[in-house]
Amino acid sequence: MHYKVRVEGKVVHKAIYNILGINREGHKEILGMYISESEGANFWLQVLTDLEQRGLKDILIACTDNLKGFTQAILSIYPKATTQLCIVHQIRNSLKYIASKDQKEFLKDLKLVYRALNKELAEDELLKLEEKWGAKYPVVIESWQRNWEELSQYFDFGPQIRKMIYTTNAVEGFHRQIRTVTKTKGAFTSDMALLKLVYLATKNIEKKWTTPLQNWSLIIQQLYIKFED
Image (tube, rainbow, N blue to C red; front, side, top):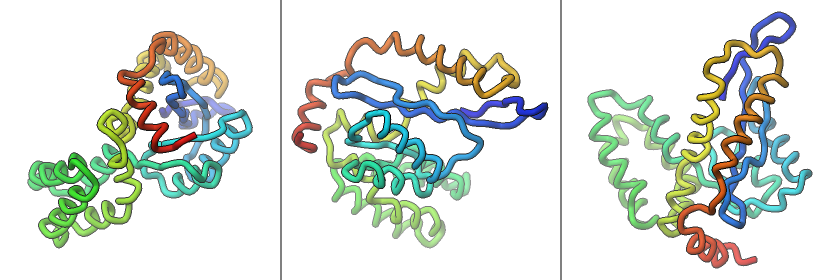
């Protein structure tokens, strides 16, 4: 989330980065809240190192956008983690390079890829997508092929888990709730003033997170089979 903060008389653009986790009891939990002027693999490496030092033992599945180097940062601290890139982010990035007159038809074909019943069928549809659109939009097709392993991790799981991890919608929904509190503010007087307001808003939001996610008893069984202990 991006905000304006006063620093030595100047207004600087800064961002707050949040990590939203689902714990073993199926409850949402904000694991970390960090403020920075820039985002990159090195920044996230510092964040993940901090989480490890604070006691986060393991991450089963990490869902992220496709920031370069983010996956490597995660795996350097949590080498057993499964990393899934956000499908919605990938689609948005793809549409930037598709002519408006082709977008509707392209999305219809693309939907056959990411909504396939399994990974094998998805890969067949990806080949068809390349045959149809590869010559016209090589950059888009190449991006899907290059990122395919991380884009397709969710096919290893059942429908309940797929819905949870193929997009970062959960954390974006949390951000929307925070913005209802911060949208009336102009430039914050300091980093701490910004962090305090977001922290207090977060605490109010967390009061609603009293029950496990829907179908958690089924989800935890799948996770136990996949990740054992």
